[in-house]
Every structure is written in C-alpha cells, then in structure tokens.
Length: 63
Image (tube, rainbow, N blue to C red; front, side, top):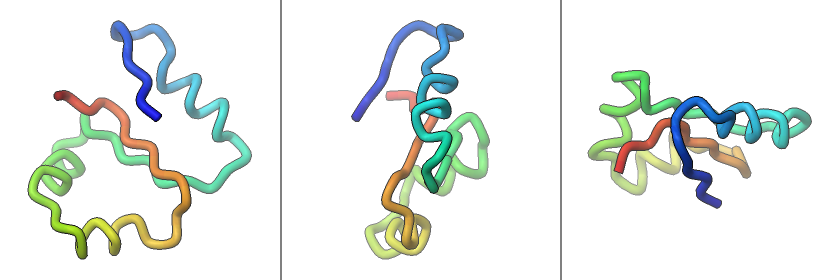
C-alpha cells in the first residue's frame, strides 16, 4: 500500500494509528543512515533487515 499526499497532513500519524496494535518495522528515510542503507540494498540484505516482520512501514520515501 502506498499513501501519498502533501506534507504535514497526517499520513504518518494515520499509519501509526492503524498499526498501533501490530508489530512492524518502521524505516524513516529522513534518517540519512536509513536512506543510505536502502539506496543500494540487495535482496539478501533486505531479507536480513526485515527479519520476521510481516509489516514494513517505510516513511518519507522520495521518488
């Protein structure tokens, strides 16, 4: 699922509310370390990063 829209309208808050009772991996691409990690990640590294999480939330993706 992709949610997009203008800045500061509550997209992250909405997802956090929906997932409040779930176990999920949160990756914020505003964090330079996270952004760098995801830039050139291969399949094996991605699997290791995700681990056993069934839900992955990637925030602030710039396309």
